[in-house]
Every structure is written in structure tokens, then in C-alpha cells.
Length: 68
Picture 1 (cartoon, rainbow, N blue to C red):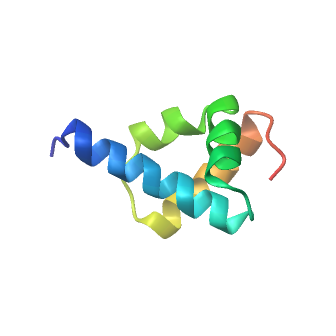
Picture 2 (picture 1 turned 90 degrees about the horizontal axis):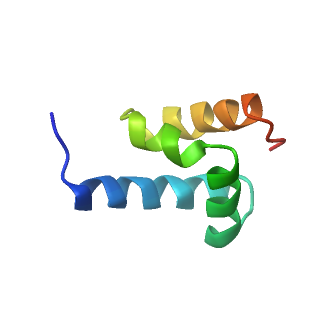
């Protein structure tokens, strides 16, 4: 299934929000962290459940040097 650009952007924004919520970060902080540790690329390449993705996103960023 192919997603539209708008759907992908909504998906990415929601994951940034959920990631920030989990780690008590603002949207700006969460975005900066995810951008720095390639989390945005990871989100864009995967389409799983939100709960699973937030956990996998955290693990991916740790592998890329993040500490959250």
C-alpha cells in the first residue's frame, strides 16, 4: 500500500509527538533528537503500530548514538 505525502507527514508528526511524550520532550526537542540520530529516516521507512514503533524508534536511535 502506498501512502500519500500528506499521510506520511501526519504519521511522522504523530510519532514525533508520541516519542516526545514518552521521554518528556517538547516537539522541537523530540524532532531535533530524532533528526540527529536518524530517527526521522527510520519512521519514514517503517509502518507498524504506534506502540511498537515508538519502542523500536528508541532502540534505533540508541544504536545511532542516542541515550534516551
